[in-house]
Image (tube, rainbow, N blue to C red; front, side, top):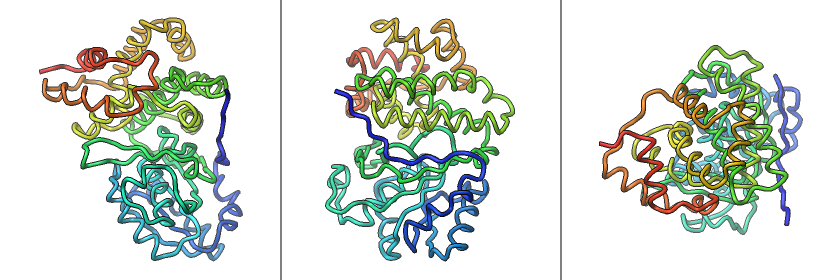
Amino acid sequence: MLNFFMPTRVLSGINCLKENSNILTGLGSRAFIVTGKKSSSQNGSLNDIITILEQNNIHYTLYNEINSNPSIQEVQDAAKIAKKTNPSFIIGIGGGSPLDAAKAIAILATNDLDEKQLFTGIYSEAPLPIIAVPTTAGTGSEVTPYSILTDYINETKKCISSPTIFPKVAFLDARYTMNLPTEITINTALDALSHALEGYLSVKATTISNIFAEKALTILGKALPKTLHHLTIDDREDLLYSSMLAGIVIAQAGTTAAHAMGYSLTFYKDIDHGKANGLVMYEYLKFINNHQHELVNKVLSLLQLKTLDDFGILLHNLLGTTPKLSIDELNLFVAKTFQSPNVSNTNPVPNRHDIENIFRNSFIIE
C-alpha cells in the first residue's frame, strides 16, 4: 500500500522570502523566532525575516539561544518564554538544530506536556504553524515531521515524529549558505547524502520516495567533490535543493542503522551529526552490499562512482583523518545503537556482530 504525505509548501530561489512575504502576513499578528546565537544574523536570513515582519506590523519575539544538538530541557525552557508572548506562529531559522527546536517549541507552546507525552507524537492541541528557513544544506528538517533532541538522561538522541510538525512553508534561499565554512558545508552535505542513501535502502522505501532519493543522489554525486573547493551560488543551490529532496525521502522512509550509530558519536565524541554519519557510511554500505548488491550498484551509479572503493575514497577525501575509539567506547556505542528504532528500518537488520564490525572497520580502535 502506498502512503505519501508531504504537506509543506516549498519556495526556493534568491529573495524567495521577500517575494512571498504575503505568506507570513496571513499567519497572524505575532511571531516567535527560533534561531542560534550568531549564524542567522551573519548570513542575512534573520534581517530579511525581521524586515518583513516590521514592514507588515507583525509583532515578534526573538529567541536566539538555541545550541547545536538542542536538549529536551532547552526546548522546554524556550517554550515557556514562547507561551508568554502568545505567538500565532513559529519561525525557525538556521540549520537542523534551530529547525528541530522550533518544531518542539511549536508543540509545547500549545500543549502542557511532560517529556514522555512530548515524544508520543499525539497532542490534544495542534502545534503552532511553523515557517522554516534553512541556512545549511543538510538536515532537510524543513520538509520532515521529525524533531531530534538530545536526551541527557539516556545519553542519546531522541526523535519526535508527528505529521503535525511538518513546517507549513519552507523558504530555500541559497544566499544564506554562501559563507558557510568548508567543514560545515561538507558535514551538512554528508548528512543529506546519508538521508538520501539510507532512505533509498530503507525497508520503508516506496516508489515515490525513491524518485526523490535518486534525484538527490544524482545531484550530490556531482556536488560533493566540489565541496572541497570554492562553491558558486549555483553549487550552493544544488546542495540546498538536494538536502530538501533528501528530507522528503526520510519523511517517507525514515533513516536506518547508520543514523543510529551516529547518535553516540555525536553525544559522546562531539562529532558533528553529518560527519558522524559519513564516518560509518562506507562500511555500512559494504554491509548492505553483501545482501543487496544490485541496489548498492544503483546507488554508486547515481553518485557517478564505479566501485564501493571509489565511494570510500570520496568519503575519506571529505572526512580526513580517521578518529580513534577505545574498546569501552566501541562496546558502549554498539549497545546504544540498538536502542534506536532506526535499526529496524535496515534491510537486512544487522545484529550486534554486524554493528561492531562496522564500527571496528570505520575507526582506529585503541
